[in-house]
Amino acid sequence: MLGVKIHDYPRLDSPNMLAALPDMGNVAGIGISYIIKKLNAKLFAEIYSYWPPFVSYKNGVVDYKQSSYKFHYLDNENLLIFSGEFNPTDPRRLYEICYEVIRMAERMNVKRLYSIGAAVRSSSGAEPKVLGAVNNEQLLDDVKNHGIIMLDDEGQITGFNGLILGIAKERGINAVCILGEIDNPNIIQPKAAQSILKVLVNILGIKPFNMSELDEEEKRKEFMEQQMSYLERVMDRGEPPGIA
Image (cartoon, rainbow, N blue to C red; front, side, top):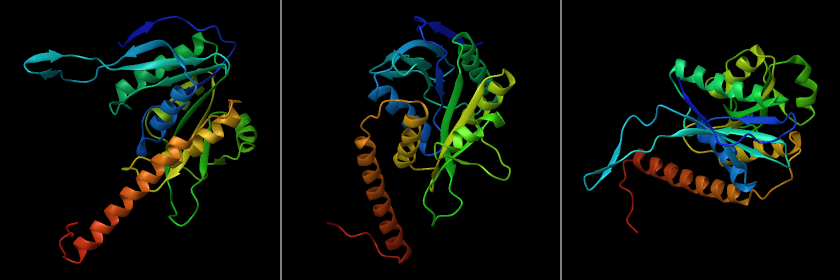
């Protein structure tokens, strides 16, 4: 069983819920953290997790900090936000987290749940898109009207950000997954997170907020990619890197 600590239930009227955990390129982690920070979301509950599986020490003195998943809320936006530090790979732990989030959604009479994440881009030459999926066909037109391109064909949305839609459907809660396309899942992707945030501002009716920090993060990411590409070309030619 997971430990749940409620600090104080917020008084919201059938709010929306944004729930996501870090994924490929940390798109979801960046997006969720940015909203919490920029809109000064308030903490109201935590789920204590079985992590980390170790303690730290300094000069022979042990320190132990148990990580937790957190629930925040925004009064004016009538929004709940669920976030955490890691996305469980163990199926049992993943289901436990999902069910706790859905229980909270039921307690708070959530109107619609949104998850966010990343999708690997199939064509490297095309402009990255914002994709989506819903757990109720009746949501399709509304989601498309916000510029989200629905996932076609067949496939899977893995991890928390996908599974939560299935469990929400099982409990009768409408849910939407919004995905930003990325090229490299092993590098943080601030631009993809920003593209999702721009959609969320519209679909959730949130007052626009400054995203310039994500622009700076994207520039740093591009610079690092250029440096790595240069080093790879040099090594391929069998030349040692130059010394400046």
